[in-house]
Image (cartoon, rainbow, N blue to C red; front, side, top):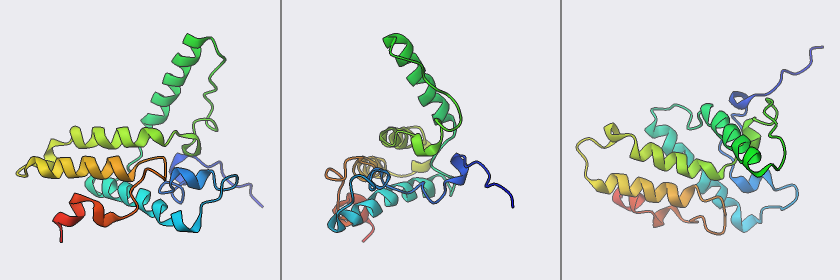
Length: 154
């Protein structure tokens, strides 16, 4: 029998749409009334992937950037050593709070998506990412109909 292969960021497909609270559910269970907010998080990620032409929203280089930032902070603080092995840099350890900033950068840096459209589309997507990729489930919108982008498509 073969040992299972080590799992890397590309092998975590079943995890890539999970809201941050899913990672904490063993210690802090998600209330049944709040489960739909996990779907709101995933919706934001799916919109992002759709805009990227079906490519994964997550970029592997972000792991290195996060690791080098943590190393710089640790060195500046003299607070310890930043471990940079593959286990520490796995997708499961990625700070999901950074995703919203990356999504907003994607909207700002993708003018080809908005050729021939007004500023409404860009503003609506910024609003969608600000509200769906909110790491605090209490602050995350709980109703997709509240998004201007959804109302514009009706």
